[in-house]
Image 1 (cartoon, rainbow, N blue to C red):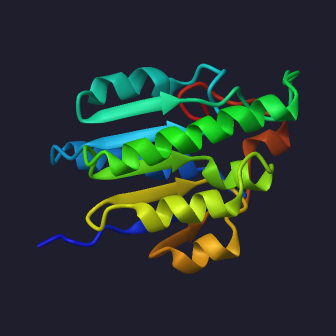
Image 2: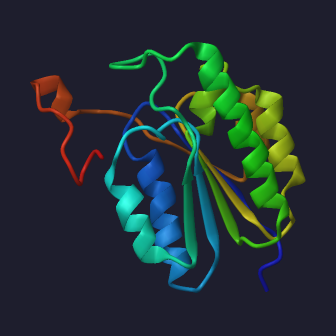
Length: 177
């Protein structure tokens, strides 16, 4: 009998962290488990999972909260705006975790939000410590803090060995976004 949920962390500089979490969501919906994915950074850009996630409803709910990638490409928002939205993402995450409505909650790019100083590692640790015993909690994003790694049950580091961008190949629809 499944009684203890896991804390799973996908981190590292290689691609595939969000994709790995979505793979679990895809598998879990096959068992009619309820999943909520909260995206901390990617909110303002359009990417494939925004549309494909609707196909997994009602078992899967995705909430994109961020204002987009912080400090890169076309970001003109002050850091304070990103921090305010990240704090709202923490509030919503806590609400979803405590609701009792989900078997799995995915906090996408939360590790990166800590690294960018949008939220604190204590915010993350409090979410982990407050999760219901049966719930699985998945945290993604580069730069997972040692405190988070220590408390997690499963940690996978994605390591980039080779990337098409190194040869000038731009992000590909359906593969990268």
